[in-house]
Length: 301
Image (cartoon, rainbow, N blue to C red):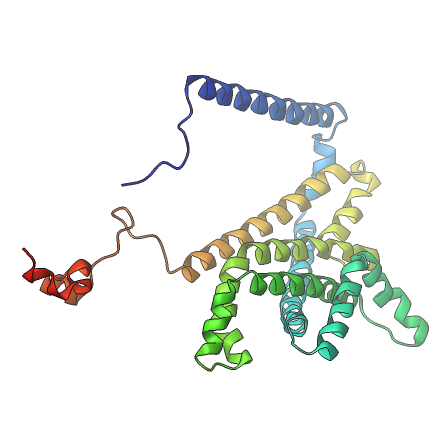
């Protein structure tokens, strides 16, 4: 039996919700209609601007750019998570000689814009005799910036847990490493999973900054095709195609994260109003919790 935690909306509230919903739909439809109208008026839907995507070579190049985008995202995502975990453990250290330097490094890389980091690795390091490829510069910039962000996410997730969890682990003699690995981190990861996925989506989208250092990912290809004069400079069609690919990738990542979240939470909620099934011993003996708490209950009148 479910309980209502709020007052059910009355007739006036329901009418107000319907009106607000209708106004929202009208405004969104008007904005989308205006955008489509401007695209049509300026010839963005003309066959000439979209004809560039009728060649097999173009789609082969798009597939290659997609592969390079995913390659940068995969390596940067894994390295960011590892770096974030290491920095978070340093931030949670009881020793100031470890905690303070790690805090300074984390705040430094969080404060530097990602674009500047990528440009420093690609354009700045050659001035001191170190040359990196565009791929390495993009991955390094993404790793340092997002690793610092993940460090704060992990630290906040662990510190948000009730203090009783830590105290209970220490009471049974667990060392700090065991306490973190066996009690705190499993709970914190389940709570942090949505924000971790959101930050991974940011990592995926930030790979587009690689076009600044001539890394040939999706945005670089969109800019290249959008400046082809023989096709009428199809910058809008190119942006629509590449943007659609980014949206599809983000939706896939969100779907995988949702499946992982369900598995971490032990699957779906049990049917029948969420009631827990009785244990086999209690089902066979018919013993209730009340009788267990009052052994002499059967002797009472």
